[in-house]
Length: 91
Image (cartoon, rainbow, N blue to C red; front, side, top):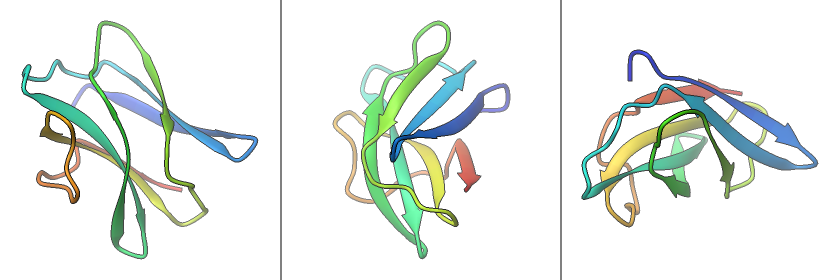
């Protein structure tokens, strides 16, 4: 997602992924958030980009040194990432 911009905000031990300019995804696909801890991706939420900015709660706890990534997955999500991340940030 070349034009996409994202950041992770942490407030009161809760992480929120905020993204803007995300490209639309096919009807049978969804964006899945991953918290990657010690090279192990943990499923951490699903969302469909819409027009304008989005804010999504990251469901798995995030610690310093973890990476938060977003991949494109089949509707309903995956147990492990099946595509390369379109967004990723190490905290």
